[in-house]
Image (cartoon, rainbow, N blue to C red):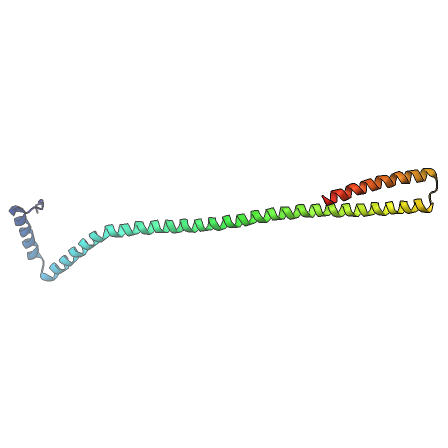
Length: 160
Protein backbone atom coordinates (compact mmCIF):
# COMPACT_ATOMS: atom_id res chain seq x y z
CA UNK A 1 0.00 0.00 0.00
CA UNK A 2 1.39 3.36 -1.00
CA UNK A 3 0.93 6.50 1.09
CA UNK A 4 -0.02 9.50 -0.93
CA UNK A 5 -0.76 13.11 -0.30
CA UNK A 6 -4.47 13.81 -0.65
CA UNK A 7 -4.72 16.00 -3.71
CA UNK A 8 -7.04 16.10 -6.62
CA UNK A 9 -4.49 14.86 -9.20
CA UNK A 10 -5.17 11.72 -11.15
CA UNK A 11 -2.46 9.55 -9.58
CA UNK A 12 -3.87 9.78 -6.06
CA UNK A 13 -7.37 9.03 -7.23
CA UNK A 14 -6.01 6.02 -9.11
CA UNK A 15 -4.23 4.68 -5.98
CA UNK A 16 -7.36 5.12 -3.87
CA UNK A 17 -9.42 3.26 -6.44
CA UNK A 18 -7.04 0.28 -6.34
CA UNK A 19 -7.15 0.18 -2.56
CA UNK A 20 -10.94 0.35 -2.61
CA UNK A 21 -11.20 -2.44 -5.15
CA UNK A 22 -8.74 -4.59 -3.24
CA UNK A 23 -10.68 -4.20 0.01
CA UNK A 24 -13.95 -4.88 -1.84
CA UNK A 25 -12.66 -8.21 -3.10
CA UNK A 26 -11.56 -9.32 0.37
CA UNK A 27 -14.66 -8.31 2.30
CA UNK A 28 -18.22 -9.39 1.66
CA UNK A 29 -21.02 -6.82 1.82
CA UNK A 30 -21.82 -7.40 5.53
CA UNK A 31 -18.19 -6.97 6.53
CA UNK A 32 -17.97 -3.91 4.33
CA UNK A 33 -21.03 -2.41 6.02
CA UNK A 34 -19.53 -3.13 9.44
CA UNK A 35 -16.26 -1.58 8.37
CA UNK A 36 -18.02 1.52 7.05
CA UNK A 37 -20.07 1.75 10.24
CA UNK A 38 -16.92 1.40 12.34
CA UNK A 39 -15.14 4.06 10.30
CA UNK A 40 -18.09 6.41 10.66
CA UNK A 41 -18.23 5.72 14.39
CA UNK A 42 -14.47 6.32 14.65
CA UNK A 43 -14.81 9.63 12.81
CA UNK A 44 -17.64 10.63 15.15
CA UNK A 45 -15.55 9.72 18.19
CA UNK A 46 -12.60 11.68 16.84
CA UNK A 47 -14.87 14.67 16.35
CA UNK A 48 -16.49 14.21 19.79
CA UNK A 49 -13.23 13.67 21.76
CA UNK A 50 -12.13 17.35 21.77
CA UNK A 51 -15.66 18.38 22.79
CA UNK A 52 -15.60 15.77 25.57
CA UNK A 53 -12.22 17.07 26.78
CA UNK A 54 -13.63 20.58 26.83
CA UNK A 55 -16.62 19.36 28.87
CA UNK A 56 -14.34 17.56 31.33
CA UNK A 57 -12.23 20.68 31.73
CA UNK A 58 -15.39 22.76 32.22
CA UNK A 59 -16.76 20.28 34.77
CA UNK A 60 -13.49 20.36 36.72
CA UNK A 61 -13.48 24.16 36.63
CA UNK A 62 -17.12 24.22 37.73
CA UNK A 63 -16.36 21.89 40.66
CA UNK A 64 -13.49 24.14 41.74
CA UNK A 65 -15.73 27.21 41.51
CA UNK A 66 -18.45 25.47 43.52
CA UNK A 67 -15.92 24.53 46.20
CA UNK A 68 -14.60 28.10 46.26
CA UNK A 69 -18.14 29.53 46.55
CA UNK A 70 -18.93 27.16 49.42
CA UNK A 71 -15.69 28.14 51.17
CA UNK A 72 -16.47 31.83 50.61
CA UNK A 73 -19.97 31.41 52.08
CA UNK A 74 -18.47 29.67 55.11
CA UNK A 75 -15.98 32.53 55.56
CA UNK A 76 -18.77 35.12 55.28
CA UNK A 77 -20.84 33.26 57.88
CA UNK A 78 -17.78 33.02 60.14
CA UNK A 79 -17.08 36.75 59.72
CA UNK A 80 -20.67 37.62 60.69
CA UNK A 81 -20.44 35.31 63.72
CA UNK A 82 -17.10 36.86 64.69
CA UNK A 83 -18.58 40.36 64.44
CA UNK A 84 -21.49 39.27 66.63
CA UNK A 85 -19.05 37.85 69.18
CA UNK A 86 -17.01 41.07 69.15
CA UNK A 87 -20.16 43.12 69.70
CA UNK A 88 -21.21 40.79 72.51
CA UNK A 89 -17.76 41.02 74.10
CA UNK A 90 -17.90 44.84 74.01
CA UNK A 91 -21.38 44.77 75.52
CA UNK A 92 -20.22 42.30 78.18
CA UNK A 93 -17.23 44.52 79.02
CA UNK A 94 -19.59 47.49 79.36
CA UNK A 95 -21.85 45.47 81.64
CA UNK A 96 -18.87 44.36 83.75
CA UNK A 97 -17.68 47.95 84.03
CA UNK A 98 -21.20 49.05 84.99
CA UNK A 99 -21.52 46.26 87.55
CA UNK A 100 -18.16 47.17 89.08
CA UNK A 101 -19.14 50.84 89.21
CA UNK A 102 -22.51 49.87 90.72
CA UNK A 103 -20.78 47.78 93.38
CA UNK A 104 -18.53 50.72 94.22
CA UNK A 105 -21.55 53.01 94.51
CA UNK A 106 -23.37 50.49 96.72
CA UNK A 107 -20.32 50.17 98.96
CA UNK A 108 -20.01 53.96 99.08
CA UNK A 109 -23.69 54.38 99.94
CA UNK A 110 -23.45 51.75 102.69
CA UNK A 111 -20.33 53.37 104.08
CA UNK A 112 -21.93 56.82 103.88
CA UNK A 113 -25.06 55.56 105.66
CA UNK A 114 -22.86 54.12 108.41
CA UNK A 115 -21.03 57.42 108.71
CA UNK A 116 -24.29 59.36 108.78
CA UNK A 117 -25.59 57.06 111.51
CA UNK A 118 -22.37 57.62 113.48
CA UNK A 119 -22.62 61.37 113.01
CA UNK A 120 -26.28 61.36 114.13
CA UNK A 121 -25.38 59.26 117.18
CA UNK A 122 -22.52 61.59 118.14
CA UNK A 123 -24.79 64.60 117.64
CA UNK A 124 -27.32 63.02 119.97
CA UNK A 125 -24.63 62.34 122.58
CA UNK A 126 -23.42 65.90 122.33
CA UNK A 127 -26.89 67.40 122.88
CA UNK A 128 -28.00 65.07 125.61
CA UNK A 129 -24.82 65.60 127.59
CA UNK A 130 -23.80 61.98 127.63
CA UNK A 131 -20.11 62.81 127.27
CA UNK A 132 -18.01 61.15 129.90
CA UNK A 133 -15.06 63.49 129.85
CA UNK A 134 -13.98 66.60 127.96
CA UNK A 135 -11.28 64.48 126.25
CA UNK A 136 -13.92 61.96 125.12
CA UNK A 137 -16.07 64.81 123.83
CA UNK A 138 -13.16 66.37 121.92
CA UNK A 139 -12.19 63.03 120.36
CA UNK A 140 -15.76 62.30 119.31
CA UNK A 141 -16.18 65.82 117.99
CA UNK A 142 -13.06 65.41 115.83
CA UNK A 143 -14.34 62.04 114.67
CA UNK A 144 -17.66 63.64 113.84
CA UNK A 145 -15.98 66.35 111.73
CA UNK A 146 -13.84 63.75 109.92
CA UNK A 147 -16.90 61.56 109.36
CA UNK A 148 -18.96 64.42 107.95
CA UNK A 149 -16.15 65.44 105.59
CA UNK A 150 -15.62 61.86 104.45
CA UNK A 151 -19.33 61.35 103.93
CA UNK A 152 -19.59 64.53 101.85
CA UNK A 153 -16.65 63.34 99.71
CA UNK A 154 -18.28 59.94 99.19
CA UNK A 155 -21.61 61.52 98.26
CA UNK A 156 -19.86 63.78 95.77
CA UNK A 157 -17.97 60.77 94.27
CA UNK A 158 -21.13 58.69 94.07
CA UNK A 159 -23.03 61.37 92.15
CA UNK A 160 -20.20 61.89 89.66
